Image (cartoon, rainbow, N blue to C red; front, side, top):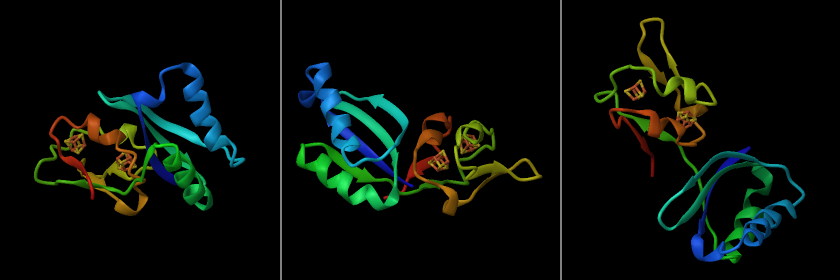
Length: 132
Ligand code: SF4
Ligand code: SF4
């Protein structure tokens, strides 16, 4: 599965039917997908979606042709100098990319990270940033 970040500007979703239309654009590829995160910003709605890897290109192209911004997510970076090993991020990580060692230190396995960014909001120290 791949993770994509979908940004839908408010101008495209003036009515509830507009939202259905966008979801249908994804469903017409005959796939199931998971919504990992739903958030709103001043400019629109952001959806973090988990979609089948082999359908990512098709879905991305369809959404972009409807004026919707799509980015494939990368991984995060853990700044060990800022981390105080409080563990707030660990319970939220869906892939166990963040976990405690037996010395109560947080360890990050980058190859397990799917870039969902759920941990970033949980960190009181700003120790987690999105890799570019
Ligand atoms: S972004 Fe954070 S919460 Fe998401 S998989 Fe990576 S380490 Fe875990
Ligand atoms: S939430 Fe931040 S400070 Fe706490 S363990 Fe995770 S990375 Fe470290």
